[in-house]
Length: 441
Image (tube, rainbow, N blue to C red; front, side, top):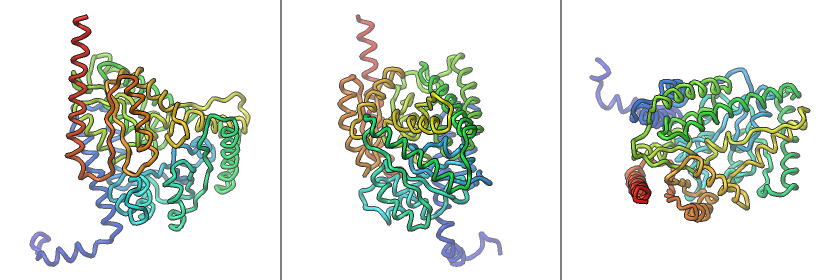
């Protein structure tokens, strides 16, 4: 008897005995496959060089491939963790912020209903011990940036993860805060070196700063191309590229980003337009889009918008500022690394958000944006609270803004699509009127 001929009762019995973890992984893979297929096939003429990144996400998120072996794996719960120090100790940083809806549901067992989707998803992933790209974590680092992650750390420690806490200041304007953070990073450098049994040296830290700096140069090169009109690359591809930095091997990532830049530059010289003729240029900000939860960027560009710039901790903020070293001595470099992660940070956790408003105003001007889309995960209080001041700043600049509160659920698709389509259409109408007024003048 063939499988197709087996009685339905036997097939049901076989399905019932499926391991819960395997079922969870299968649902994650289905979610990743669907989003990756959308990003890869639902837009015309993607760059050929993007094939590396599409295949990377398929291998890691859809097939479960573990791409790192032989080195200590250091999990990070925020981009404020100094990557340069981890690389200098010949370890691999892996960002643990996760985007699966199935993980969000699993993590919801630990958190109140009105909690951040990202934190719930991270808890769910850690509970399942199914971290993309790595077999196991040797160490986990938690900075006291996000309040909900800070309260969730005790739950993570109950899962028997080794967690290191870094105290992050909530005021960055004072010299006292800056010195406090420098001391924190110095202590972290010593403690991580001791825990991993590896000595940090001047030479290794300088090499690590250079490696991260080269990755930043590649990203900045890509970002400069997004200023062009017509825009030669879609935002959904840029988000995928930056998300890959969370877990890819850094030199390979840098090389592949330059390959994308080479192709996109050729396209730009040929006048290629990745979007439509009248596609509004969008600045994306707020809660971070992290694969496979890229539904909002996907919807924006399906609705004929094009994301030309972003201000989020899953893309622009990750690469924005580089380490500036005065003296190439070990602890001068450690202090310079610390300054990079505090002085340029525009996270909304700070008491004041003047730097964030200034940064958004600069991006709006430099990238000639027509509108702003501000995403806040439901339950993420800092982004929910800050949107009012950002809205006021955009109104002052005369730039329309759409505020979207969402979670990881795919069930919101229809309602969100309608709002986004209406916003994009209003930007088109506004742009036509402005152009008509200029012609009359």
